[in-house]
Length: 256
Image (cartoon, rainbow, N blue to C red; front, side, top):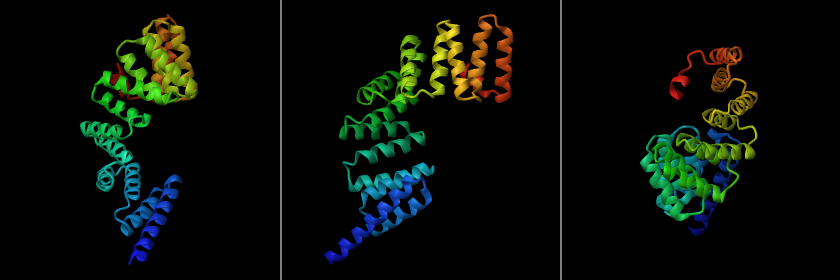
């Protein structure tokens, strides 16, 4: 009996490893099938449950992913990655308080995980808990100082708090680590605009447009900067291009 059980466990592991390879190739439907077999052979395979949950998450099946992460945690209550992954599914479902609880539990198990701190910071931002978000972004950056997205998101909070020099510093660091980060150039341009440094704003909006030629917001904001300088023909040209790209322009209402 023991030998048969070992064979089943080995077979489950083999299907898990097959699923992992398919997952890495982004063949998600095939990966899901492999993980299904792995779990069927060994319902206690927490790694297969966790990874199946990740595939469900990537496919937008958030409720199904929650079931898998929860099953994995019943088997392995110390599996920090399952708490982190379940927190992300809660976030995608808009259940922010549950997401915070899971990220916090994951951090109790692995306090120095920059990725989990980043995830929790993003949800604090959704909850408008900006000081808590700043604290988590800063802690994450101390652990992973090359995370461009982390600098960018912290920069947005600084911008919204009118801490423009801090925002510019963070957007600049984001650009340093990710030189083709069009939104970082754009938002640094907005910061320069707020500081009434129009030439710098125009330079950043222009770089954002070079990187992303259909960037309607960058054309619009560059148009504002040109108009502020009295360069009305250039401003009109930029407004026109923004309208061509985004005729309905809901983003203008949302942003302004």
